[in-house]
Image (cartoon, rainbow, N blue to C red; front, side, top):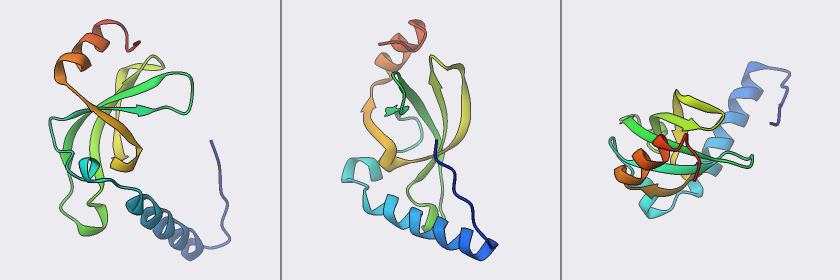
Length: 108
């Protein structure tokens, strides 16, 4: 995990805006189409994948590539709620595969 420090709230807001623009620029067509009910797999940055299910999207233009999700992994088998930027999604997975991996404790 990387931590950044800022001298002012304005500097932090500017860095956030730039990070959001960079993430939006990485979005590919299928990621932009992810909708509530879809399941996906992401990279945790560790040695295990993260699986998620999209619960809802946002209508605000600046949040168009964020989805409210519940994500699971071997590190968090009960799931965690939060916003996910679609550019971090590696692939969509079927509901059937999602449920099979759930039964296996989120291990492939």
